[in-house]
Length: 359
Image 1 (cartoon, one colour):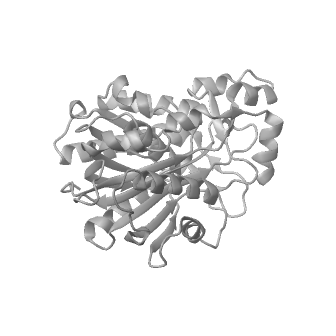
Image 2: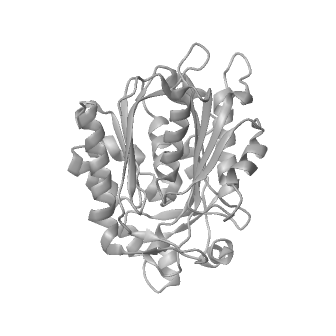
């Protein structure tokens, strides 16, 4: 759906755990050289500590977004203006109890809040963003907060062990006005969904299962291409109209392939490929990749964002940066690259205690 561009991103924040494990270290534990990870274009992945879960990561990303919003403001913004909180994840720590209520209390948000925990595999984060945007666009909320966060699980020895990672990204959505200068206007968005079962986990199972033969062409590629083409066609845009593109990053191979198939250049995609140093953060992945682009984008550049969630579906967005992004970049507390630079390697034994030991 084409939008009028009145609503967009007011601020964003990211958070990564301090721990990471290399593909070589994972491979060594299973008697290999880690080449599976390198073939996927992932040289290392983040690992949540034993005392970190989705709520922890979501709270810290949300706090970073609030800080970035408040930095440089002439008058103190009102937290009460934030009237939605949607958190997308496939690793919510409670089966029955929302993550959002804990995050809301930790961030000091108002009790008058539209809230829900969302689950649609790796696209739950962008679904949260789309819903928050819709609330603001309709006038039902002044500012919406959307978060994608995950501490992804993988069975030891499975190929997913080389990619399943942890991280979070939070976005504040608002209408552009004299008091709230958005840094990127949303010009359009749409979603698609089909019953394509490439990845699932039943209640009580510690680790997800996947049907590898469905994860590529019928899953990721079919949905991402359909969503991207439909939105660009509706908005009469071509790849040449965009400064940047973001495609969901289960690994580094898939987004490179789909970008090429859709007619985007390697340069348009390059900043979004943080997966090689972070891993697949599932519901946070597309939002973290978008943050990496916004960290370096210039004013008046269009960005195509297309997520993918197994099961299966995609959300597509067209954003256009504004002049406000330049001052925002100067005042933000930390870029995603700065978070990556702080990552500390751990051994497979430490990884087992902090990650495998949770399940």
